Length: 100
Figure 1 (tube, rainbow, N blue to C red):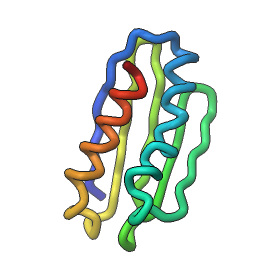
Figure 2: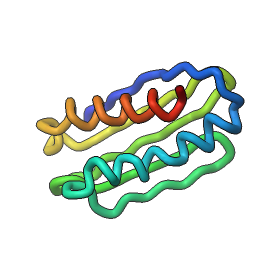
Figure 3: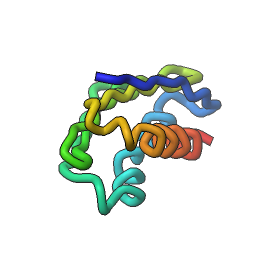
């Protein structure tokens, strides 16, 4: 299963960063509404797990919020490789926007 990960720096409190990133799946639903199905998200302390289905495959991700950065990891099946660039670009853009 291919993976993508990146770190997004922030200057927010850890709590505020978590609050903002909790909107990530909702923001993705807006942009991928015609492709995305069954979005799910759960938080435990400062770690979130999220997933959604897209064109017959399931994308899974994890967000870990630290004091000055957030680490995002996304994995997806090979069948979704054609969507890789679009999904990665949008998740990274939304995370940057939410934490700025």
